[in-house]
Length: 494
Ligand SMILES: [Zn+2]
Picture 1 (tube, rainbow, N blue to C red):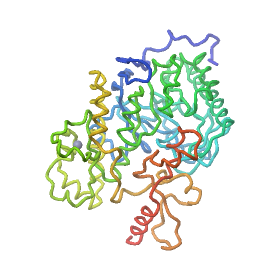
Picture 2: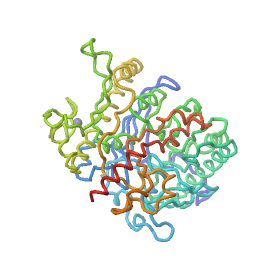
Picture 3: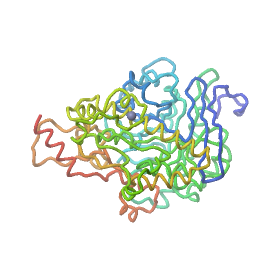
Picture 4: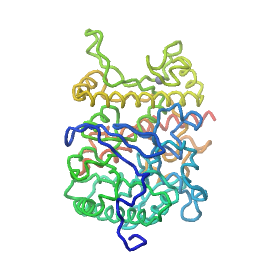
């Protein structure tokens, strides 16, 4: 559906195209090394990660310290910007200049910008998807947008990469066969839509690259979509966005050359390693900010350090340090010895513990900078290990050295925002933030998503017929009582 009669021709595409070079691969379902380049943007070596933004910023990291955060690319969700759609035109669309989304969020020009419809992780929406629309959560509540609106928004916002719309009933406990058929049909239509709209953009206007979603359902159930993707869309897409890493063996071979963005939310570094071992390239990692909000300074490296003392080998090392503990009050060491981040090179542990106790925002800023550096080093280590051919052994050593999950949250996090609540409770809440004064006894409980770990609820596996959706359903898994208690205590003081 291009404007002129001639079909799109690859050789006519402008030179400023996204390129992905596979530097090393040892076959299907094996870790691989790659390099994602776009002229004018920082190169992203894979396996690697994107900063996961919230309303335009990586949480706690303002523009002035973004440079210190070791982030070469960001993931941004459209649902963060379309408040009051369709009644009023969202402010992000009122910027009449090129690169409008980048300007709106003051993102440095050399940072890769990836746009998707939904946040990572997405809050399940009570607005059901239809043949032409998907439900999402704006700061003014649940809305829906059409595939056409999405394409128009992307054209206006000019991200470098856009993740195509996928029909996924997030949070639904059981997904029937008929519904899965629909997922495949709708996603096929929507992917075709955005490709046609992008190819219709006139020469001279910037064109974005498209990552096609791969649904979290078995291959035979999305075969209709995959067949069409291979038959007539493969030349128009620059990557795939994968919602279930454990279905990677279903990925058609004709798509192997494309970069793989994981939208399968990892609970911790062990799960990241599992996804990498299956050949995943790029990640958004919500657990970084969740750990930061909980006051946890991540503390792990890959490959894991050699065990110095075999006598202590029975206890595994924690993946993070709880900065709320008063025991840090006199510690003059960096958060992690040898860490090169801004926090560790300029401040010591006791100061950061003091900042948290005083509820100073700077405390979370420093921990967030540190946590991103820890992940950046982790991925460098992973790439070196794949290069050396020792990845498998290194993963086994990592698993033996570190505890299987991140430490539990003990202290209070920063103020909870609307999108941090689960979808089920949105139905009962008129306001996103609790009132300052209210009846102590009668208030319903609030669930916060901080510190929650998707997939941490094994019993959910029995109620869901599709493993892929488990992590998305597990979003409701939080300690309600505790969270509500904290909110009440804070309210009582204010
Ligand atoms: Zn550090």
